[in-house]
Image 1 (cartoon, rainbow, N blue to C red):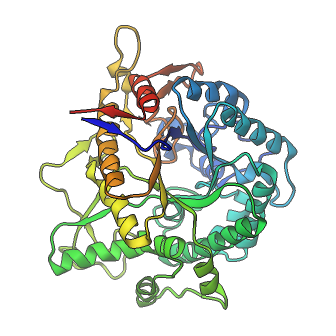
Image 2: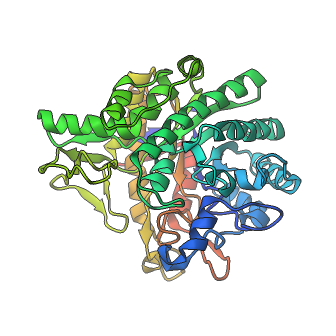
Length: 462
């Protein structure tokens, strides 16, 4: 069968600034939470590879833009480092402006739609020392940074994404001990969530009042939740996890409302959110134009089979257990279930619940360790497993479009093997491989396959 996508559909991939730029202390850049975490605890990073050991994108962006063009990308997504653009939080770093303008033009001049993320897990250490988004006072500094980006780069960016996976950002810092300041604090986590919602609405308002070019949105990692059964306990467990990790952002950003069940749930667990005068109206009036969705795997849960220890800290895992479905297919390297229909279910949920906003799949991909195992005699990695993964997910994306989902593009994660916050270079996702020692890049088989998908605006499959 031939799967031909709509004429204006965009094809590409993505990277993030912290995991690619390098130059971590060059030309005035200030430290981020990742720089500080690595300084304090290098042993907690896979092979002690830190955020300075990246692709040196800062100096070689033209090379990478050409590699993207070589495989016919017509879409690309990356990010700006707040700590590079405004090292002291106030003064614009002109060297950073020059870099970002030139880098953006390198992709735009090669015919790619450019999407830029403003905040991607990379809080400047300056502001994290003040509490980050747990402190409402930091909101004004964030809005100021975003407004500077809109002013400086207006006309170069097609889609501005305010956040990338905001629930992950708060989780790794305040609930999972995976990034500086390495807290496990349910109250701080939810204060940060609420302040991020308010900051988001303020940035949308700033963008629209400024009448800047392009569209404004955010990227959410909606992990579609499947309860083990339709029994009350399993349904309640699934709904609780949904409240804690998804509806707290999805409802305000997409529907313009604060989820009242979420507020009540927090109050039940002694977390009080201070809703100031004007907050609800601000949220109501400043919904997004476009929704980015990072979709990798389903989340399967069941109710607890034991009583929760009342002395244990509350985390996202406190009210559910993972349910391992019989017969599931796994990516054993990453530990994630492969279930391509999750794409369809996610897109249709957004269509039916939130009025079918313009959507992009901003990440979807397969991380595999030790890919050198799959080289052919010519030295190319034969990543047929990645081709199969992407193809099966795209088939369900195609079906969602046929059923009315307003999906406009697909960006695979990732363009090239890069430094990731959870496992550095352990699991590789890219169309291109990258040698950390030599800086050499090589195309994988999937890059050639995806090039043909882009040229044909689709593919054939049995």
